[in-house]
Image 1 (cartoon, helix red, strand yellow):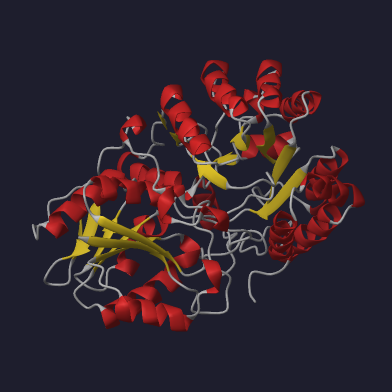
Image 2: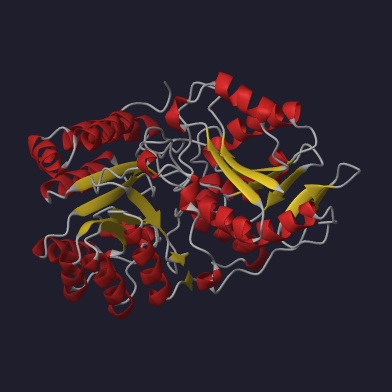
Length: 482
């Protein structure tokens, strides 16, 4: 059976949705490892698998139309996030216009939560939550023309047009059983990471989910889909699944043999224990691979920082959100200002560049003054990079319930919004317009500082890397609408 995983072109004036993190429009192209893992599973099952990205390479609507005219796929798979819902539904209409007998499978957080929006035809199927095993079993049924009505983890329309939501599927514990992502399906030179400035670049994932309880949190699009489905059934956060260090090292060895020189780890929390980190860091250092990760400040001890510094770690993303202890407590961050400062101090000591992630508007305790204090502190600390976003009340989070109940959401209900530019939340002491102005002003203030520009220029190894980073910065600073 021929199966195509695709990212359709954008049919409106908006920028393409970023489908890996899942809550912003695209700043720079990110390889979707989650989708490529599904592709690898399907290849292992003997299917003919293709990957078509109509956002990369300047593909026009004309090329999209010619693709559909000539394509013979039996199944199309969309990895859909909130910001891509409208566009993906429109793309589905195009597909059925040219291939009325094809099936369309939707995976990701968008269809997991907004299931009914995707089910307009009996040949459309939603895979809710963690998709890997469900997609494999569903495609087995479709290939053999067998009934899939009893499969766990799917939603579909029956012959009477009624939505059937089958029971959830148990979450994966053994991630080592999954094949490595099918990176051979994509052009590895199409992807980069401005924080690493070396190519060829790829991403890796070594775990799924996070044990902490931040009220606003939307982790990566995979773990958010996993969490949405698990919470809907159990009312609790899902357990963490982790690959063994040996399995992670095996993938690093493979990537090194393929010539990759940079890796970004997308785990919600990559740094767990020193025992787990050490063999992975040793493998990265052995092959001279530069890399970066996301970590909690309370996971950064002096020994951890030393290991990171000695193994070519070129960035650690710290989810700071605020330097105000009252706000950190309200949002259940589980961190204090002093812990954040201590982590930054350790990383600076061992020359590990720090990226601070700041989130405006997570709490009604915030004011213009508290936001300015947090952003001024971030700039004074001379972090390598600062990413400022505005909190959105994503359905399925505690923050959404609070915002809905207290009427903080403009218009009364969540609408997909690019958190890098827009706010749909307004508080009595901090309006949405004030948040947007602060976001823009401090982005300009940080990214156009002479020190920042000089540090970044020194790290580029080629003009093409500089040009990609410049385009990413332009996307970061300008509105999500063209």
